[in-house]
Image 1 (cartoon, protein in one colour):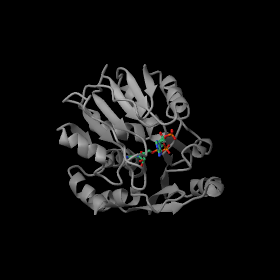
Image 2 (cartoon, protein in one colour):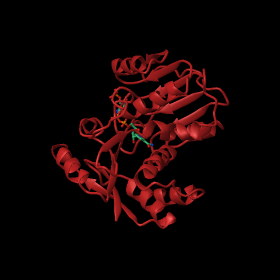
Image 3 (cartoon, protein in one colour):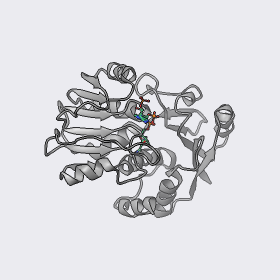
Image 4 (cartoon, helix red, strand yellow):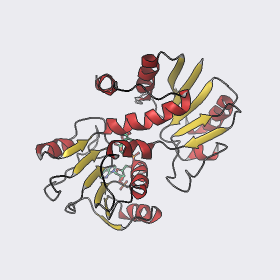
Length: 268
Ligand code: NAP
């Protein structure tokens, strides 16, 4: 039976098996998607073993393997020189392994209808998720990007590597009047300090996008809704990146019109 997996260390928290399992059931496909605890020491052996299994369609890759796995696939495409992190490995029928990153497209999918060309954007964070966000924003040809981050040097490096115009500010600086505000930091996540921003500089038609999905209703999104701003939560990106991986693994698009059911399952 065809199967795919999500690997990481730790891995118990991953919601990917719920998402892919829901789609497999909904489509009546004969396939499985499971979580697999793989430590850094065991990563190469895992990939070598799975490569020989024709039923294995590939895996999603989460922390801490998104960098190391780039050295273990046959065809990493342009992932290393662009986003610099790989979240999906696909086994071709000839046993060759292809790697890609579906996070950037997953992030951008909910914004596809918004015209952000030339628009000013504010991004909080400069870690792995921010890389995917900035890659997608550069592709969308946005205007000036202001990154707010605890470690300014890291953020400066990101602006330069994605060829974006903009600047870096500390987390205590006032927010710029951006058309889109993205929280790509861990702030607001369960167990982390909240992201405490004064949203008043944002224009009334601004979009506030929080990548955090645990909790789903963050203080940032609450404040944005209180101001009647458009919001996008972290589940949209999670489902978006999973949808692209599902097509690569199982050769079919996820079922249409079932997102409300899936979201209910993920938040139960
Ligand atoms: P990461 O690589 O560890 O980066 C964490 C970022 O948060 C860095 O910018 C870090 O600042 C900042 N940060 C962490 N703790 C902080 C603190 N106490 N004070 C100030 N800044 C702090 O993590 P990541 O993989 O980018 O993930 C970031 C968030 O995105 C997480 O909540 C994750 O769940 C979420 N995410 C969501 C999706 C989705 O599909 N919705 C996908 C990926 C990630 P420094 O640079 O100064 O360390």
